[in-house]
Length: 382
Image (cartoon, rainbow, N blue to C red; front, side, top):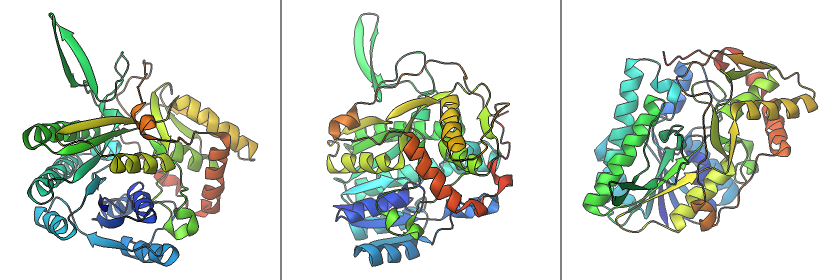
């Protein structure tokens, strides 16, 4: 396939780019370096300094023999994006090119406005590029389980059957996001569903839970190929943050009661899920939705797992229940369905003590890079 990866410099984008390239596909990588730029501005750079995208592509070619074409630019510029589509004629476009942080979207009005513009105009431009240039191209959009919120019923995979006053129909599962970022992801889904009905596009929407991990088979060939690993409150995911905090002997920042439960998955499984979706595409006129998680944990359960492994390795891991800066339910029902990707062939990597231990090992190698002031910045929803 000819595969276009948008947001290819990011935590998920770069491993995905290598994964498809390593399997022999023609991969084109696009990024505007938003995350690098903002992480620098907010003084919360990644744990491991990463070469830029062009340097990464050159290094990957050296170790693998596979070429990745790179474009640096912003997909909210329709002329830029359309030119890439006309040049590449992609069979699949993988859409990671969004502002990915709930806290960032809640910091102030300007960052909220940027999140809305970047995420929705970017998605709209992809829709038009596919319609006008590559109508058979399969759009794979990374959604988020955060779109659903925490309803008091089981979370189905994207769709729900409703019976009302003796009549039945199928609808998108109700969404009730807990941040502006997650709300823009809901709007992405609605935008795509409208254009699927209107123009017969083919789309897979992956409702992904928080991802953890640093290691992939491709990145392990050279540490300079590691993903953009954030550990701060703004761009870092919870388990990644906890492991870095434990290595730094900074008390784990458990928000509120710590009973908030979510679905999680290993970075390696993100690669699998996206690849399985691309190689078994949705049909024309179909919005196919998968809940992309493999296990569910509460924040307390994750903290206790990190504490157990960390203490066993000789770290003094402490927990600190702090006032929750977010507005969210802390005691709630949570039971998502996640069978679709397993049926496509997903072979999950579960969260074991060995997996957490391997994360400790890598983080410890770079512990001198940890900036304690970056760990918690107190971004409040209130």
